[in-house]
Length: 248
Ligand code: HPA
Image (cartoon, rainbow, N blue to C red):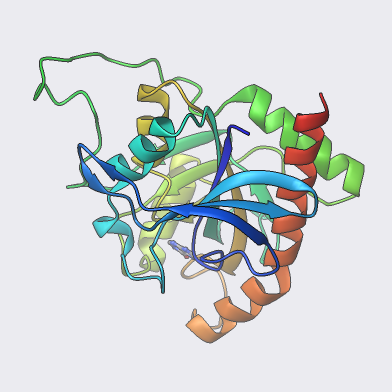
């Protein structure tokens, strides 16, 4: 069992899963967001880490991404499926859509974003042209097809700093830049995973139209309704993909 799921907004705990073990992990970079759970759900076994901590206590810019990724690496995880709630920008990324990112643009700043900061004499420049793992993406695409679950198989994720949502003008800029969805937690997580050689994929649930793309203001209540309606499918898709992987 070497797959871990990092849960984002709306996937802070894994209701309905059997918790086989739970371990608090300290790393050279500090503590991970929460204790790492080893869970069993719908026949699949994997590690689960809630990115924002228990009770959703860390905002996107305060998450210790380095500790989280290091902790997974430390227990022997070699593949990470990240779940992200996002705003939709592209027409095909409407509210409720599941999007499997294949590219990312990083607009975040001021986050501890690398293990190669020269502190311990290590320095490297990772290859990051294709930031997501194609085999892991294929595993999820196959599981979605098998389940008849609609999945947007490609999308460019724009990672903004948050915690505020964007202005309408910022979203227009992101759109001109080629972004399909916008979230606040995709980076530096994806790059840190690559630095440690972990395969990484990001499954995104669109929980609102990005700012200015709908006549309605974005409210947390509306977002919560979409999460309540969509997160079970996300969990089932993850479990199906992880089970299929363990049968291979
Ligand atoms: N923007 C940034 N992050 C988000 C959004 C959004 O519209 N929705 C959910 N996470």
